[in-house]
Amino acid sequence: MNPARFSFDSGSFRDRCGRVVIDGEGIFRVLTAEGLAGWNGVANLPFFQRLMADGQIIKTTTLADDFACRFDLPAEYVAVLQHERIPFVSYPYEWSFGMLRQAAVLHLKVLASALDHGWILKDASPFNVQFCGIRSVFIDTGSFVKMLPSEPWLAYRQFCEMMLFPLLLQAYRNVDFQPLIRGSLDGISCRDFSRLISWRDMLRPGVFSHVWLQAVLDRNTQTTESTVSHLQSEGFHPDMIRHNITKLTRLMTRLHWTPAATRWTNYRTALPHVLQDTAAKLEFVKNVCHSRRWPLVWDLGCNDGAFSRIAAQSAETVVAMDSDHGCVERLYQALCAENSSNILPLCIDLENQSPAMGWRGCERKPLEERGMPNLVLCLGIIHHLVIGHNIPLSSVTDWLSSLGGEIVLEFPSKKDPMVQALLQNKRDQYSDYSLALLDQALARHFEIRHRIVLPSGERTLLHAVPKNSQRA
Image (cartoon, rainbow, N blue to C red):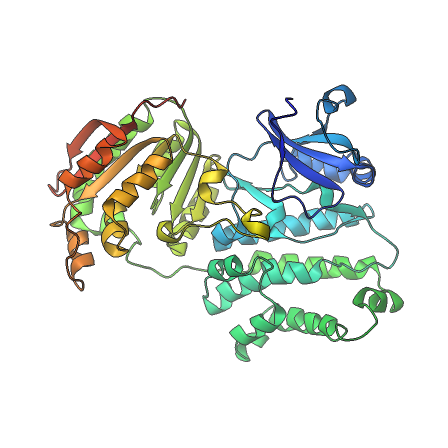
């Protein structure tokens, strides 16, 4: 450990008892005396060890004192833990319905297990969960605290606002939750949730009971008596928490959302010109992907994940991104059925990517700060960015260059049916959209290693490598 190299993670400052430290050697958590007492109290309990062995709690070890001393830390930190590294950090506003539901179920499972041993989780944030591929992992080991007598589940409101309400809106009203929770990192308040549902929805499972319970808690917000004191004075019992957790778990497991068909459903097989190109396109991508081992691959506009699956055969991690929530949800469900281990599907709109957010714009990181790709699959997407969203072609290639990895790029000409559809109700102002100008723009940053014209005759595939690339 080089003391000059480590830095506190900008998203871990809210916990006063422990902070995450990022170093080239790994992910660490430094603990105060209070944090260490909490860790020592829970770490060796059977439920904690079982969930950690099953991969449901992040694998964590306590570093020996001599190694911990290598950290040049402030005096209030007395111990250091090391966590398993998450391959690529993602956020709840990038997850599909099934992923957020899985995170909620995991949280309830961990909470129920802790209760049986006299412990409780002090918060209920989906940011305490990460995904390794499609496997959800609880990462906030500092969230466990000893339960006090007659203590209620203080994080119940947070669970509703950050997980339950978004899922109910998606399942019952078909309202995509990602823009809502991206716009409000604290989730959807009870008041806002009530405005987004109808009276008929109050009869649906889980709505009335949990909205009403929130309303009961809200009644005390204008009084001098705290909600906690009120519930304790009423003789609050842990069995009440267990009963609530059981009901919520049952609700979550029965909650479903079936995405409606869109123009991208069965895209690769529904359109004749796309189907005509499929075999050659798959072979081209396969040759590039299987040429070496890739630590991190991004698949932009992944659709059904066909090319993500090819990349995954030769990659440690593939991040499969698409702006269509339905596509991402269907891919997530398919990957679950396949028991895939290294493809992470995310809802990402490339022309409006997840920005730096939170306190001072540092708490939640943009894509590039979470892991730069070694290979980018940019298939069937560039015409949507340039023509569909009016982004200059050179700006797209500059962004791809800034990622630092090799690229596989598909370029449809203006005669391509999909490009024609984009131009149908627009004036053609895209003089920069041509293969010749693409070659010029790429030449500033890349060396084109290989290209083919696909059988349809209107699409060209390019494999380009950054000039003077030193990346492994």
